[in-house]
Length: 74
Image (cartoon, rainbow, N blue to C red; front, top):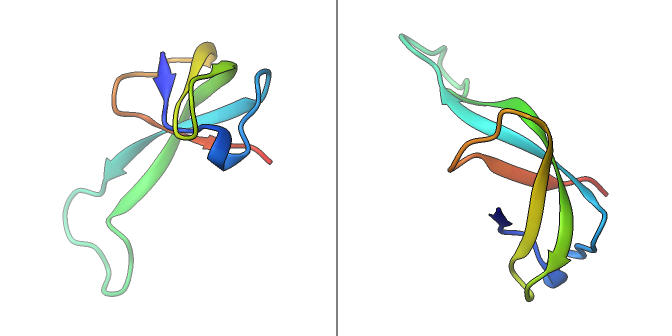
């Protein structure tokens, strides 16, 4: 899999990234509250860096799907 984290973000091979799925709240949301939340779905490990913006990674835990987002753990 390819993730949108690269050299520019400080990514290095071996680093872990948490993966999340964006979920929209159903029904009425309180004024001022967000109708979006991130649900943890697993972790990936960077295998190698492609360039400033992308890296190859492999799933090490969870059920990660296309369009999930990742966050570099610093």
